[in-house]
Length: 305
Image 1 (cartoon, rainbow, N blue to C red):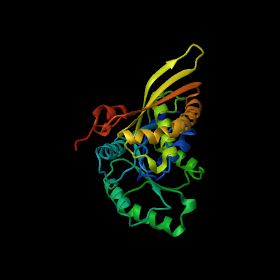
Image 2: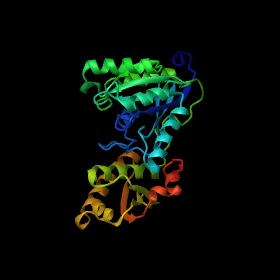
Image 3: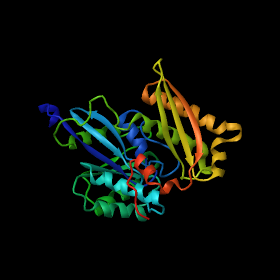
Image 4: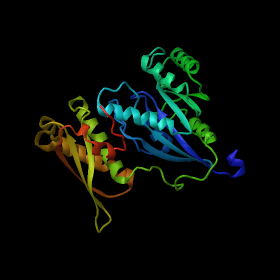
């Protein structure tokens, strides 16, 4: 055991599951601060976000992957490929299941279990939102999952209030392979500041727009200037696919984009521990979802049709 011998451990844990299973909320709980987008809209995580935490002598690198679902568009295919790629590259895979909404016979749930059946590394089953699910549902989900695939352990947690998360983190620390740390001990993410700032603004965009805005929207940090007083001027562009969407994002008299910018700036300052001056611009870029460069910037492989 590394705690007794002083031997360091380090490894990767992939958090996978269906959209809105609570992976991003769980990542933020495991790390102890906000790294990932958390909204009511499914499929908001597009990139593989790595969060890092220390558990005793173990360094755990969490990979919060996009939700696994049946892809229809090119962007969907890239997101699902990224999710399974994150699982394949990990030392441990944690399957996060929304116990409140997932039925034991749900087609998507069964499909993920079938895909995990041949996993070459340990897997954990994590039933989330257990405080909102009946006990019978929890027992059925656990039984079906452990029958279809091999799980080293089953955890029942609430990512929202943190119940059960400490036990999960301790178990994962034990499961990490021996080896040197992969990152400095005080580092909590390997996202660049520019990307993290973009993700924060994209979250505020989704929260403000609700169902008015399609998923064909992205945010890019195009300018990052450190001023003499140590503050940072951040220029970001919100890209939409059609001219009509630009007006939705701007809002009447620019009210919507002003509110989004104000909320994003506060979270950026808190997450990055900086004083920020955020400037948002809205531009139309038709069919950006078919542009390989946009995928590269999000850390996704550009798939074929």
